[in-house]
Every structure is written in C-alpha cells, then in structure tokens.
Image 1 (cartoon, one colour):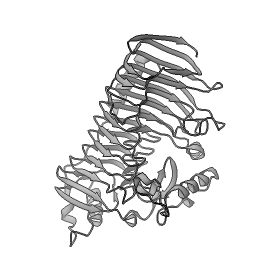
Image 2 (image 1 turned 30 degrees about the vertical axis):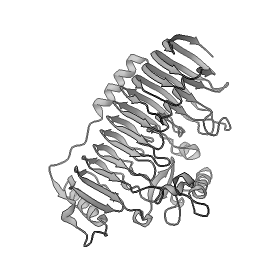
Image 3 (image 1 turned 120 degrees about the vertical axis):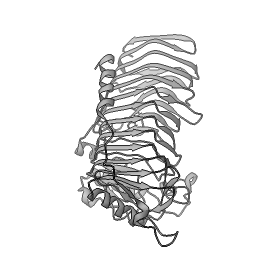
Image 4 (image 1 turned 45 degrees about the vertical axis):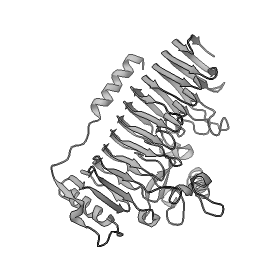
Length: 445
C-alpha cells in the first residue's frame, strides 16, 4: 500500500464507520428506582431500564443529573446509555458487584473474570453517549493496589495480581479451555472500565472517564467502532486510554487522553492464546486527538500475536512533561505476529521524554523467543516536534529486520541524543531536519 492509496483507504474507513441510530424512545433510569436510601446501589435500576429499552425495540436510557452508585452495567442491542451533563455513574468499589464472572480478556488473554464496569457481549447497535462522567472509583484504596506496587497503595503482606497473572499465562500456554480459566471472586485481576466483546456497531461519545481500575475503553473482536469526543483522566497502573483488540473498522476521533499508560494501544492477542484465536486488528483510524500523558501516544503492541494492519494517524497533538513516546511499535520474538501498513501524518509534538518514532523488537522479553515479528511499511510524514529525546529509534533483528520504514518532511527542533537505526531494510529518511541539521538516509542499515 503506497502513501496516496493509504490515505484514500483511511477516508474510506472514516466514511464506513457510522454511528448507530436509535429509535426516539427514552427510558429514564430514575423511573426504575430509585433505591430506598442513598447508600443503596442503582444496579437493578440500570438492568431493568436497559432490558425495558431493549425489549421495546431500542432507544435511549437516560441518566439525568445526579450521582448513581452502581455495580456492573451490561448493555443490550439497540440501547444507548445516555449520561447527561451533570450526571455521574459512580461504580462500586466492592468486587462482588462485578460477579458473576464474564467472558473477557485480561491483558490480551481470554478468561472469565470480574465483569468490566460497562460490558456487552455479542450485542449490536449499542452506545454510551452524553456529557456526563463515568467514575470508576479506583485509587490507592481501591483496585489500583491490586497491581502490587507501593506507589499505588499496595503494602507487604497484601495480596496482588502477580500470582493470578502467572496462572493465567500458564493456562494459555497449556491450552487449558477458556471455560476453565476462571478468576473473579478471591482473585485479583483488575476489570476494565468499558468492554464491548464480539459486538458490532458501537459508539462511545462525549463522556468523561475518570479513576478506572485498568484499561478504560477496550473493544475486543468488534466491528464498526466509533470513539469520539471522549476525555479520559485516569493516571492509575495499566490505565491505557483506548485499546482496540482484534477489531476491524475502528475510528477514534477528537479525544483527550491523560492516562497512566498508553494513550491508545492497538492489540491482537498475546502469545499462545493470540495464536489460538488468530484474529488480527485492522483498519483503525485515529484523528484529531490530544495525547498528554503517559507512555505511548499511539502504541502498537505489545500484544501483536494475531497481527495488526492498516493503522492511520493524522492531525493529532502529542506532548507533555510526562509523556514518553509518540508512535511506539513495541513487540518481540515471544509475541510474534506482524505489523504492516502504518501511516502517520501531520502531528504536532510539544514535548516527549523519549522518541517521536520508536519501532523496537527488543521490548520487554527482548529476543528470547522463536517467533520474530514482521514489521513492514511504516510511513511517518509531516511531524513538527519541539522537543524529544531523539527523532527515532528503529531496532529490528539481524535475521528479521524492519522493512520499508519511511520518515519524511518532518522537523525535530530540540533533541538530546542521536537517532538509532539498526537492522532495517529499506529505510528512507528524506526532507528531515534534526536540531536544525538535515538528515538524509536511504537504503539498508
């Protein structure tokens, strides 16, 4: 795919990913409650309102101004959960409110675990809209300490997720049936904030998301997903902003990310489980977004096993004193898979503590596996950067080099160290200025 064809294809993705439409029926959640006291939860009211809306043929469940303490909310087909300005859905900090366990993925491996706070499985035509707030209630006292890090509230003697995470990875490696990979009660694998799973025609629009236990928006094996004008402010551990995983046709537009991990991370399953499922993530358009904090602005990986292709990024703003990378393609010979056809253009960078473009096959486990990933056809153009550690870091393997990597017509005003490029076949750096000096490279390095 050449550059001109790539951006035509990006426009096609934008045009085909349209928001779902809903009948003009409104079901006010307060009509299915309220609880008898302010300490009781609205869980049953949300369930009843969503079911009534679904059974009527679809429409909108209105959440008017106020605060609504609840457990898990499960969406059904043809239902828009509309959170009005001044409304806050405040999720319970009691893990029991997210049981029974549901079919999900934890860090890209299939299992049964606590329900994501807003969850849908096998549904079509669903939405979360409005100018209200989704508050996960997480912090050092709740959820975050499960990661097992003192900085997030864990103290010696407290349980944490390491044992469960190791157990899940062993189960996946041994091909234990997913139905037997049951966590939830008594375990410490944190749930995601929003997860549509095997859904089609999904819209998440306008809401503000704060204090998530883990990944905020995590569509898995979905098709036609539109995330727009969402603002996310959650600096907890593994608090990725939006992680489309093994999805097709995704548009992320006009969003603000101030999060504790990657702003956007595109994924496709992990290791043996990713190979078993074998579903790529493809046709993702990211435009007009503001990435402020923390690791990758747009990350691809680390979970690349099922393959990732056709990723387009344009007109975004990356930068802040605590933001690390710009485009961050990260994987290794344990994860495998492929990444191909990645196009970035017209990005403004104010400040990154590391590289504007990082493609690194030595991430995490390094080169300790037997499944070297194939990375090819990455094109970056029109970047205007004020300050980065360096413009790019490109590291393939001698036996599996990066292929067809282009950086062109870009300026990197202030850098701290030299660029790195090794084991790259078909590197093209043209029309690039770094610290005021032209950089031109073509060929293999």
